[in-house]
Amino acid sequence: MPIPLDAAEVLNREFLEIRARLLHLAASLDRLDRAEGAVHDDPRLAKIRAGLEILGGVESERAERIQLLFSRPYDANWVKSLGVERRG
Image (cartoon, rainbow, N blue to C red; front, side):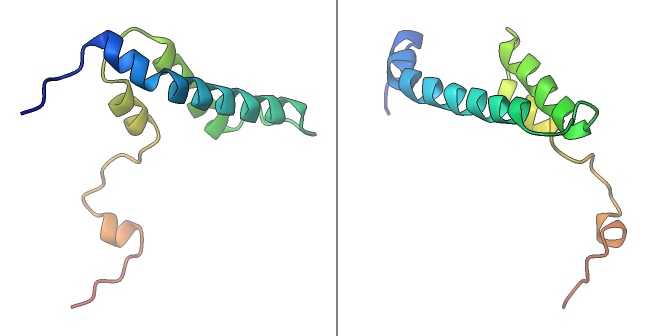
């Protein structure tokens, strides 16, 4: 059984990847800022901002909370409401 990495080892291993992803995100947001038109009232942008707040927080389970932020609520009648055709 492998020995789990400690926090310093995880940071050493993940730092450059995290840095690259943050730069990619910053560049995307900069392109959005420079683009013609306005999307300040777009609900997708509001979700992106909420996701950034989750990332900047100190609470755990960030990945789960962001996944839930961008997910639809469960609908027991999803087959009917989404018009999915059942085969079988």
